[in-house]
Length: 346
View 1 (cartoon, rainbow, N blue to C red):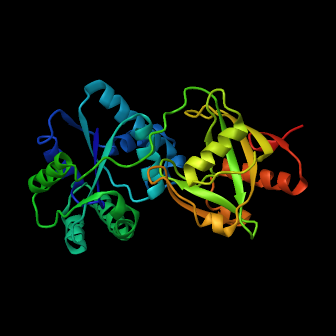
View 2: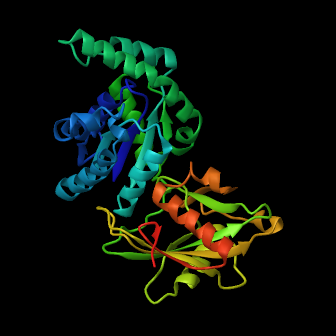
View 3: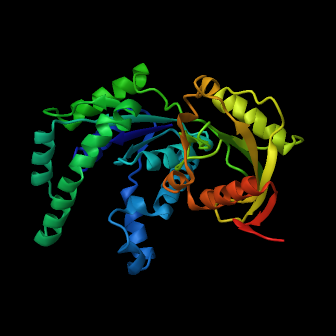
């Protein structure tokens, strides 16, 4: 199990975490900032200069999960993780990958009043021997107060158990967190636990269109980016039937007919992913009355929307957007396309 202590930069996460490991039996402090420190020595300076925060590096998010899993395999028990996560897509990626490893996460957020938070930022000392570095760190923390407030007013406030640590000692806050975990108030995150593939996979997606010829996308809780309704084809299952099953499971819509194949795309392995075959089908038009009956499984999908091809460019990861564009061209031409890594062949 992981107790993830979230909050603004400078909110007191690390000091709370240090106290918490003394209150939760068999617990270990794991600070992902150490991963970022290691990357500063491993990655070329040119790559580091491209981001404002280590969290924007895909390798950081991957290593945070891999290190947590390795630590739990080594020491067992509970990991206490003090780490700010303000972008929901990063929370999805990290918590989803932990869930895929069957690692339960209890998500807590510290919520001091903004005045107290800014005072703490001004008085904390990260680089006592380097005034310039101290000033840069302080200004960096202040810049992230507003994104923290926006996240707290939105997804973060809904996702995490809030503990007000304004005017309380770290020991008092740690006791409040420990009590919340023990009482089940800081409950396990309701995120789908999809096992990670151990080899190449076959997946089937279905495009469903509305009366304006827009197509349906869904927003998974367990990975970044939007997606077509669909999922992994089970052993012995026909891809088209898998697409129909996934549409019924994900959004509660039973397709009347087997959807027409638009394309097959071979996805190149990109570690840690194994790649495989991706089928995309035309599920036809979804009348407005039927769209109104869409149901989402809360642990797996958080939202759905009909979008245009242009709007999808800002929602889909590049590999899926390329696949979508060719699927729409195949639908227009009434043909089937064979793709390799997103490009037609043959």
